[in-house]
Amino acid sequence: MNAMLRSDAHHHVWQLARGDYGWLTPALAPIHRDFAIDDLAPLLATRGIGATVLVQAAPTVAETRWLLDVARASGGLVRAVVGWADLAAPGAIATLGTLAADPLLKGIRPMLQDLPDPGWIERPDVQPALAALPGLGLRFDALVTPRELASLRRMLARHPGLAVVVDHCAKPAIALGAWQPWADDLAAIARESSACCKLSGLVTEAGSRWTVDTLRPYVDHVVNAFGSDRVIWGSDWPVVNLASGYTRWAEATDALLAGLSDEERAGILGGNALRFYGLG
Image 1: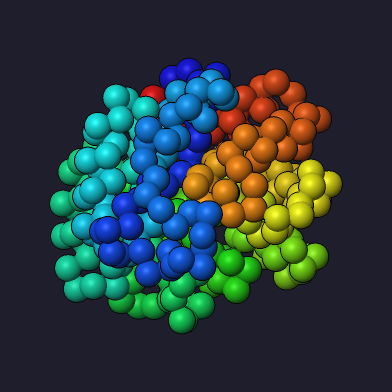
Image 2: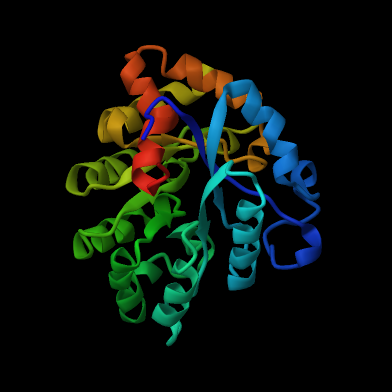
């Protein structure tokens, strides 16, 4: 495994005609169109990125199967897919087993932030599927906001063998200057579990007027809490276009991580994702 290989551990593609993106409305004008790997490839090339993780954007198994097809057709660029399955369904474990038979499926992501119940991940009917994930070789991407962090913390204590990454630093409300309880809850997860954290999605939470200094306290907190060996960089493209763009977020990352060693930066920008998702 080459720790120096740069990766983008969180991006999407979509085709609006699929019809299963309930959240993707015309109100999100900058991203309300089709996005494909061919659109992303030139952006990756400018950063020397040679491996990516393609993440679900619709709560359907059909989209997951489509993403696996996209990954297979990417010429080795997409090394992993994080898909979706209804973990509360009676047949959840069988569905997960079928999906996990594809070696490109590396993880599962229920869209926890969109569910009415902030404690959904603790429901009794969800626990068997969570317990089955490690045996199927699957990780868990936690798409959460500060609202769900306390529940996620309890779930992690119940499933210590589950490989978990917190997406988008748990989406702190940066535009509002919010800090607590996000900061303490995320630090507790870092301290009490082996979870990783994705350095992604922050510019969307900061709004279009963000600067590097706007992001710095949040990024510093995440790196200090998780350590440079458990932070994983991702672009969240094309969602990043709502408040910035791929290149500006990547350049901001360089500025935000400038105080770290070359080895630490190499981990955040590639090596940690390769290890966590098993991309080698």
